[in-house]
Amino acid sequence: MVAGDGVTVDGSGSVANPYIISAEAVTCEQVRPCFSAGDGAGYDPATGVISARPSGEDGNALEIGPDGGLLVPPAEVTCEQVRPCFSAGDGAAYDSETGVISARPSEDAGNNVAIGEDGGLYVPTGSATVTTGCGLTGDGSGGAPVTAATGTWPFECDVDVYGGGVYCDGTGALRGDPRSQATYTQDSLNQHYDETPVPGDSPGTPVETRYLEITNPDPCREAFLVCEVEVDVDFLLPAGAGASYGISTDEMYYTANTGSSTVTDAHVQTTKVYNRVIPPGGTLSEPLQIIMGRGTDGATYNRIQTFMRAFIFNL
Image 1 (cartoon, helix red, strand yellow):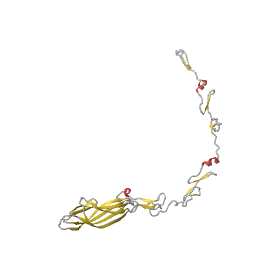
Image 2: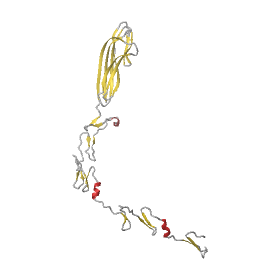
Image 3: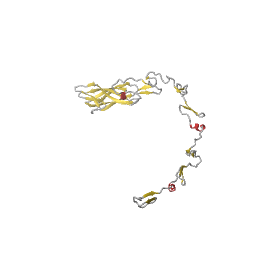
C-alpha cells in the first residue's frame, strides 16, 4: 500500500501491527483562498469573515444596525409632501389642506343621497322607489324593478320572427312600427278615332300607350301594388273581316265577321291583373300598352276605352 497526497499509512498489515490510514486535516489557510466577494458582499481572506457591503454612493439609506443587521431607517415624509399626490374624482371630495377625503353627493334635483347623523351615506326609506304609469310596472325596488308591462303573444307564429318593434322618438316617447295603410288610385280614358286600319301582323302592333302615375305614400316601407287594367276597342268589320287587340304582349280578344254585311262597333271589355312594388316614397309611371293585329279585309277601329287602377298596400 502507498499513501497518496494528504494521506498517511502506518503498520505492516499483520494482526499485531494492522494498517492505519490517516487523512491530514484541512486548515483554514488552505480553504480561504477559494472564496472571494461579489457585488453587495465583503470578504476578509485573512479572517474568513463574509459580510454585506452597503454602497458608498450619496443618498444610500442602507446601513448596518446596532444589532449587526441591515437597516434602512424610516423615511421622514411630511403630510405636506404627500397631500399634493391626491385629488378627488367623481363622487368624492378632497381637502388638500387637511387631507380629508369624503363622499360628495350630487346637488342635482331629486337626489336622495345624504350624509347621515353617524357620518355615513344615507338614503331615506322609500326614496329609491318610483311611481309607474301606463306601460310600466314595478316600483324600482330590488324585489320589484321597473319593467315594461307586456301582454301575452296570442298568435301561433314566433314572436321573435314576426313581432313588431317599439322605438324611442326624439321627444322620448315610445313609438311602434309605422302604421299599415292601404290606398287606391285610378285613371280612365275613352277616346274616339277616325276609322283606322287594324294592323295585319300577329300577335299585334302597339297602337297606343297610356300611363298611370302611382306614388308610394309611405316614406318608410315599400308599397305592394295590385294593378288592374281594362281595355275595350270598337271594331268596324266588313263582311269576312277579322281583328284582334291585346294588352302588352298578350292578345286578349279576337273577332271575325262571318256574315255578308258590315258589323259596326264590335267590341268586348277585357281585364288583366298583375302586381308591382314601389320603393319607399317612390313614384311609378305604369304603362298600359294596347296592341292590335290580325286585321283582314278592311277591318278598322274607331274607339279605345281604358281603365287603370292600382291598389296600394304598405304593410
